[in-house]
Length: 181
Image (cartoon, rainbow, N blue to C red):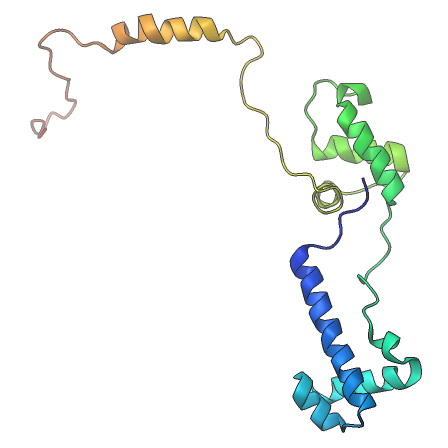
């Protein structure tokens, strides 16, 4: 599975900012002054001056978005695909006791497969933002649970326990005043 593209809101913002820069390029080509371009586009004159310099030296392409900033991911898409495949095989297939995946276990698998060590908090960011996974919490039930026995107990034993003696009033522990109910 390839890396998930930017979140939709971030992508829309990037496109909106690029459209504003490209509109400024059209105004530069029409010969408008920096102050007028700044007023029409809604930015500072300094931004327009920077854009104009880039436009003069690289044309309209110099004003296009260069994509996400920051360092390149330490785990490539291909490596992340291998990690995802290993995670889908299950925890026991990867040498762990029990089928529960924790961030520490996933970090161990990532390090084993790619040689890259990640903090558990960053492991969560990889799972969430690059693979599109979400938190899945197991239902807390005993492995030895016998649903038939539980249903029988609720149907037969619990009503007998819940039942009060005929005519009995609930006990009241306060010695200072009578129950007001």
